[in-house]
Amino acid sequence: MIVVGDTNKRIVVYPIIVLVILCGFYLRVSNVFDQVPWDGEDFMAGRILESKDIVINNSFPGVSKPLWQLMVAFGYRVMGFRLFVGSLWAVYFGTAIIALIYKLCQRLFNSDVGFYAALFTASMLTFIHVSRLPRAPMASLFFMLLAVNLYLKFAKKGWIRVREMVLVGVAAGFTITLHSMYFIPSYLILGLWELLREIRLSSDIPTKIIRVFRGVSVLTVAMFIPVSVAEIVVRVSRMYGITAASWIGGAFLQMFDPFPPAKYISDYFSYIETFVFTDGLLVAVLFLISFIVSLLQLKRTSSSSIFRALTLFLVPLVLLELSIPTKGLALKKYYIIFMAGVPVLIGYSIGMIVSRLRFSTTHMFTGTVLRSVLVVVVLGWGYIRAQPRIEWTSGIDQTYNIATKLDYEYIYYAMELGDFYFSTENNAHLFTSEVSKTLLPTGKNIIISTVTGSCDCSMSDKICSEDIRNFRHVDKDKLKVIDLVQGYGPRLQGPIRPYRCHVLYRY
Image (tube, rainbow, N blue to C red):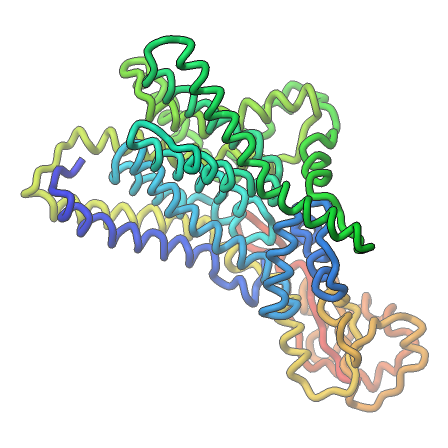
């Protein structure tokens, strides 16, 4: 660890942390506007359709992830019906998580550990990948980390006021309305931390029990404030005849909806397997070493900070494993719930090793250079691994942009998500067999079609066999290819491959 004064240390560390956060933001936001990471599951899981309905019909959100639906709907109000709106929210929360993990480790250990943890958070493929998807997990993880950061901030002085615990609970409570799978882990982590704090502060058992009961009770009530306020609004709306889904009912369904039972012993390793596949064997081995080192250090020192860092990983993992025999094997994507603990433990282990080097004030420049080199190496490695996600594009949003800039009288669409983009426009219609029978070749009609595979078959005004079926009632001699947009299949790693081709015809 670089032993320097607080002011000098801030001058050295903070600019590098800002650089790490900016690089992490770049990895998450790069090409999100025109090259939206999307597939059918993301489209439905992101509650994109429900959010559009909120804007069009001024309706209430549905039962699944209601606050997330409102946030995406707000984005539609500001930016229009664009598929990247949900991804932008994920980008913002995913970037903020880098800063939260830095502050978390700074409060648990020191700024050096915070630096290493933030660096890996910015570059790990899980955080990059999920921060580019139009889904709610990054927002839920953000509020979970915000709550534990607030708790550590308030607990620093040795005792926590009731209003401070309420603030912690409210921050954690937003997970219920975003992605309720994060609610129970957040509650148990904060409850364990409060139990540990009171055990260390109080001397007699009755006092410990009373204080723990008081703290956990306040936390419990506070965590239900966000969803309770929303439920009051729902109930009042129903009294006036407005259809509104229950937010509490939605959270209940999401948390306790059964999944298919496990069939094999390997199913119990599904979440860990997904983590290893996504982030790679190198990160997995580094984390395993860090986990063992942290356990050994906890046994040797009984450090409350190490215990808290371990709970960020172990509590969500244990809950997920217990849910397999009791509830069934949930979606593998839920492994993200325990991922916050991974960079924290890696950062702690690296920080402990570096501290043995014992840089003095005279070697501050050397330490800065080493940090900078580490930033370049780790972030560069993250960029190379994330490049398939950054370069991948469905091509749908780009096709929409091209079509709306053309000179046309009517647009007829047979492309993926055409309804999402064009359903609110009067001069745009779904291209069906019945429509094709009555369509006249005026030269001002634009037809958009999606075909499977590469765009090679549509080059030089050639009509793909897949399109020939769609255009069997159209005068093919009057069709002219005016543009092509290649879409590539979603890949976590490795080269991207042609997946869909969006063809724009003038007719």
